[in-house]
Length: 275
Image 1 (cartoon, rainbow, N blue to C red):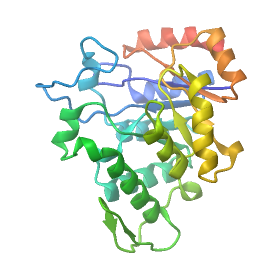
Image 2 (image 1 turned 180 degrees about the vertical axis):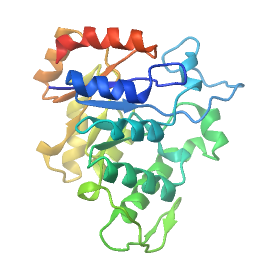
Image 3 (image 1 turned 30 degrees about the vertical axis):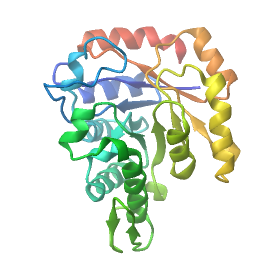
Image 4 (image 1 turned 135 degrees about the horizontal axis):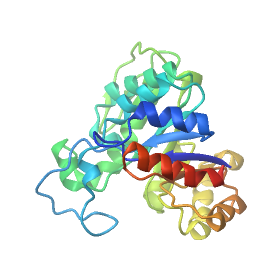
């Protein structure tokens, strides 16, 4: 099983360069980074995990800038977002960022797609909350048009682009795409249409949700052997990872603390038992 990691990298934590080098040297498979552009000070949306919102949410580094640093000092470490808030981006600019990072890293990038939880943050970007799933779907279709080998137009309800020359292309034509979010028909429909798999936070309840996802995948005419499920932000135990393996899961993303260099390196020492 591939063991990757995720962390809220901030201006107060270990640096992307130091972490990426340590991960590769120690044999970890990858580094995934979350995204928040800002956290509005006046917010009624509750933290999904309950309680006060941890301070690192308002201090996250831009994931594409941080991953570019990580790519420059490694050769095999997989790089990903967990997740990119696609609705909060101009899709033409985002397609260029993704293609450039994937091209420069030699095809090491995974795009984690997310829909967000913070209504106020999304509203600052002009996102209508009720239509964000449809907006993300349109923007993903537009980005795939820009990544196509030949100039390809796209016209949707929420996004459009004329046939365009857009280079570089992602290595292999497209990065790996994993859709994050809770189990349910809206998320699973997007997984089945354009993604390579699902990025469930924590990985709980897979015994119930995986059969539902596999049915949606099969109904979309997708190859049943191609579906990837990557539990994300997992706090590991030997029993938990064994259950994942028994479910056919081949990659798990472990949660690192948003700490100093010393704190993060201690966590990597603890996680070495799972490699």
